[in-house]
Length: 244
Ligand code: BV8
Ligand code: ZN
Image (cartoon, rainbow, N blue to C red; front, top):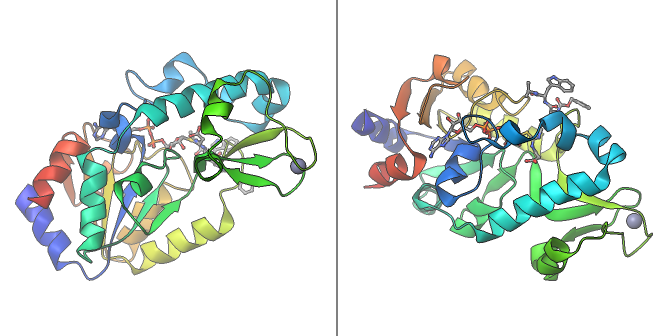
């Protein structure tokens, strides 16, 4: 099956990757669903929604600070590096990710579309202030502080620049992702349960336009029914083999 997948990828006219939390599992970043998933201990509705932030911003900030800390300790794994290498070789045109952990950038991927935002970016709940904490060097200050972060421009609460349930995805990112999917003849789907929409449409759009779907996952997912090739296994291990 791996040889078949390599043949399809090498023959591709326009290949993209679509990734979820599973690609970062081997980097030590907790996934959302599944046996040790985040949502086991927390309910998404209690944390990743505008209502939750409205009701208890301190609880939501505790959750995101905890996740920022986990992600800061994480390094890209061979799956992230393999996608960056495939892009460098001109085989992969873009990575469309649901992840907010910035590990694709860290691994060297250039053309990354973040459908659900980025945990290291914050934005003001009132004015247009945005800050990339990695660029401003304020991550440590943010992660270690116990107070609610305030906007330096207008004093209102800052929030994580990620997409919560019930919120629209960033329009430009979503439009770019849909356009790329329409043009793709191969999509490499790695580590997603394929249950969150509209992101999960991406592989379906490739399929509808006659493209091939190659899935890498440790178990079946919402995408497996349309997968032309299903490579059961850990993303890091399978992608390392594909690159060989
Ligand atoms: C929207 C970001 C409308 C922040 C996340 C009721 C009200 C409102 C909306 C809805 C509703 N009911 C349904 C909806 C739609 C909803 C939705 O799809 N819900 C699902 C759960 C049913 N979608 C939304 O709300 C979206 N917005 O619809 O707005 C709208 C439109 C216009 C105008 C206004 C409003 C917003 C969705 C984005 C939500 N944000 N998080 C943060 O990260 O904290 S969701 C969260 O799930 C993450 O973003 C994550 O990326 C995403 C998907 O999860 P996965 O990445 O797939 O991860 P998961 O843990 O599920 O799976 C991991 C997979 O990896 C598994 O398959 C596992 O087997 C595999 N794996 C594990 N280890 C490995 C591995 N594979 C390989 N190797 C390994 N080692
Ligand atoms: Zn402000």
